[in-house]
Amino acid sequence: MASEKSKTIHIIGAGISGLIAAQILENHGYAPTVIEATDSEGGRVKTDTVHGYNLDHGFQVLLTSYPAAQKYLNYKDLDLQYFLPGATIFKNNSISTIGDAFRNFGLLIPTILSTKVSVSDKFKILKLNRILKQKSIEDIFSEKETTTLQYLEKFGFSQKTIQNFFIPFFSGIFLETKLSTSSRMFEFVYKMFGTGYAAIPKAGIGEIPKQLKNNLSATSFLFNTKVTSVDNKTITLSNGETLESDEIIIATDPAKFITSKNSKKIAWKSCQTLYFETNKSVIKKPIIGLVANEDSLINNIFYSTSLPNTHTAKKQLLSVTVVRNHNLHESLLVKQVTKELETLCGITNVNFLKAYDIAKALPERENLSYAPFSEEIKLDNHITLAGDYLCNGSLNAAMLSGELAAKTVIENLENQTIPLE
Image (tube, rainbow, N blue to C red; front, side):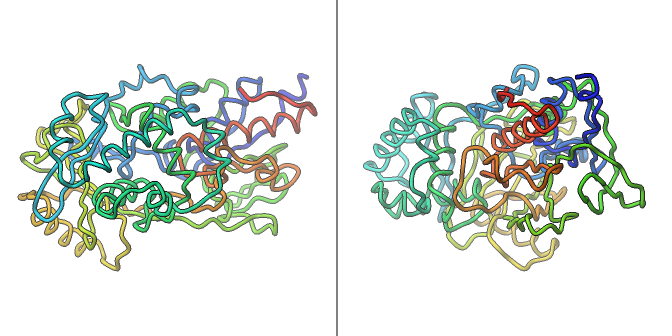
């Protein structure tokens, strides 16, 4: 057993999947080395500090009902700040708010008075909440797939409600505007929202990978280290150095350095998030703002400063997410978004801070599963894959894939089946 524990294991990628894989390996007595091309952990889950504001790499939230997140994260230490369970809708120069009044009574009157969603559809939303709360995750991912749009239409929602609420809300989650994403993903995400809350750590989304890294004690990290190729047990770095390994976990897009016939090219969805400083907020509560105009670039807005935070700057911080495809370079995008903020949301006098163009924001995948299939994660005898692209685009999936990758490596080394954590 001692020789098994001294095996050399490399994990390529210090994102969520790689960090979870390292934790599982440590739990079983191994001391892996994580190779990361950038200067910090997190992958797509990072936070920068710019002019005294914490800017997440894209508008991201943690759904507190994620089973894997509940297993691996300490919510109290993250100092989570919670969104109101609802949305403020901007359309045709009018504003209204809808939400779950059973969990926040203050949303009752605005929801009743909102004309953006019909009365009958408000009852259908309650019905859908009740159905999905009772439906197991296993049942959700065993259902026949349709598109989310087909699912909503079959459930009986009107086109008005679909256009005013479901399309802008879930376009911001799925990063596509046609709601062509699998109905399995819709049911899963809707269930997570209905049984928990959307939240952000007080210091930004980057606190999640930071906590995962800080939990590690035997893992070594090689930051600012780029991998150019992986072949069997050999990792070649951009400086020409080679590393020999008994087992390799690729916890990032393998297409960068693998040309194996067994590897599959990953399709990705993109988005842009722009941050602005403003003097005042048009949304006074911690609730997401949806822009329901069909031809608008802006999908959603959120005032990060509406939640308790660690910003040192004193004004309001506004994030704007763009999902729709366009051919605008940054200066023209900022100009168009600034114009829409004024005409569609009544937001003026904004100071642009920074834009994030996230080319690989979410993986595209058909036949969604809750967790990866064991046969999909093995590239060869010594290379194992990890990442949410193997099952569904979520933080929960990223964690589960890291867990399964580590379990697979341990079984390879110890020649015995081990249970998942």
